[in-house]
Length: 515
Figure 1 (cartoon, rainbow, N blue to C red):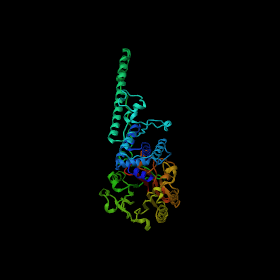
Figure 2 (spheres, rainbow, N blue to C red):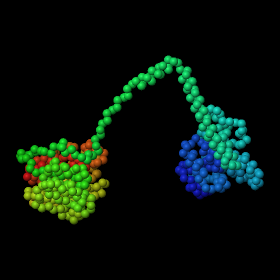
Figure 3 (cartoon, rainbow, N blue to C red):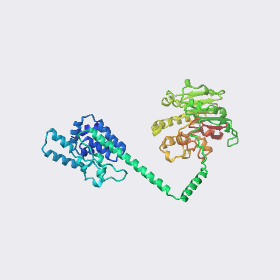
């Protein structure tokens, strides 16, 4: 019988709790028509009763098979919890019926069906679960009619329309429909009576009270509506265009001994060359007018460069990796370098397009895009391999000429270099391993030019995530650097962060030096 119930429940697409409820109903009601009656009598949410009623119609078995099948279900325990008292009563009735002798005559069987008891559950509380009310055709008279007005109904009048015989399905459905109609008419009548009572009460009000009501309503109409609060324009999440006309790119900075700068070098992680061009990023070169301009993360191979990147008066050099749309660096130079080399002399990293080195008469310029440790620090081991190679590479150049290392170093060296240091100790860019790598580089005879000039300056960042309106709130990181050989420290004039220049999640930085 348990496997039979599984087949029965499997054919009905209902929630598990609804199936358990249906199982209890079947054990109580003994046949499919009583199930329908039970659903109509209960004050359920419409969705549950309609789902159970529709499930009764979905079963493709014949009525005789369902009738015998439902009788067999009365001996099954409910799937969850203990059996209800109604299920126990139905089990006792089945035992009594099995003990009684069976009669197979057609006439007697029809009489037995007519006098068969239907246990329709009433709206009982949990305290009265053990009480079971039985109804017979003899208990109800044809002259009884539903009350005219809503309110409490006695048990006999309440179940007047719930009398259903087992002889035909149509009579049961008709009884259910008539009961629903009577309920709706009763509700309408009660509402109409209530509205009439309210009208009588309003008529009984004195003239003075009506005048005071009218005056109050007029006062409300005469009052002017409350003034609306002025809308405050929220700052943009990330600006795409820069107002270059409003920015001042001039400077009169000098060295410590009073020499004016004579060389300007700029660096910018553009976050994709094609997108940068669409945001009028090339205009920055015209307004800043640097002698050397370095770009990182171009994400563009040389054969796919947009024509707008060609700027008059500059020699251009590009390096892209074997993987298209990944990393890549570029270099603009007004003066043609003596020699340009690519990579750090390491096969593992030179295929990614991360370093361009330009040799000039008095110094080496190294434009680098350092690997990121990645979300979840998945590429931190790769970063740990990279740092010693870069350190040894620039150290070797420094033994020949002074070095200017610039670009996206992908690390905030000190807690002052980012807005939220405490919550980012395990995130890429501020792990202890990455910070130690920068410390090791500086200890080899190099200087962080910005911190050398501004050791205590806060809120100076070069990168802001696109999320959380970070740039307008200045919640950022200082990831871009100009790192100089200590030999060039006396030549340093200024290091400027162009935070008001937009077009990427990074902003450009500019070095002013006298050489």
